[in-house]
Image 1 (tube, rainbow, N blue to C red):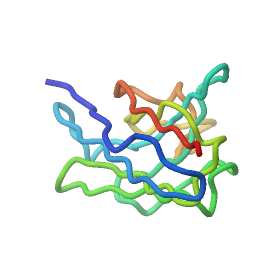
Image 2 (spheres, rainbow, N blue to C red):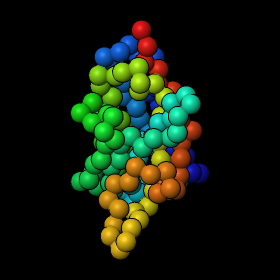
Image 3 (cartoon, rainbow, N blue to C red):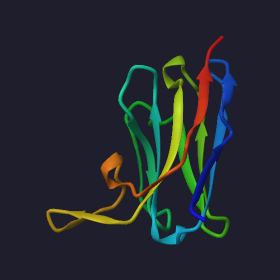
Image 4 (cartoon, helix red, strand yellow):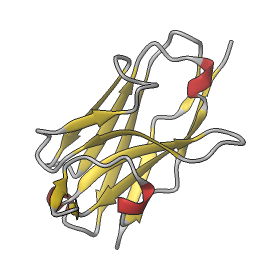
Length: 131
């Protein structure tokens, strides 16, 4: 049974921290790039952080660089997003997604932040940053 289930969202004050988890099953987790996306009210879905199959390649959106950390535990089929120094602008539904490695112009895409590169999606967890 294919599943990607996010957890850890909630309400946090500006400057606070949250740790999101995405537990998966039903597909070969170790073969997939894992990416966190988010969608704020009235905005398009945005790629936030990605990590390749063995964790050797990581990419963050400029808006979260220096504040968010992505990691994965292949033994547990789980990917994490540690969010520190949260801002009201981080308020969004956060989605976990998985994609097989792809190529562009003959070169591998090591760590995409594009929805088009994803094959499987979770249903999301809401993060609200507010006083």
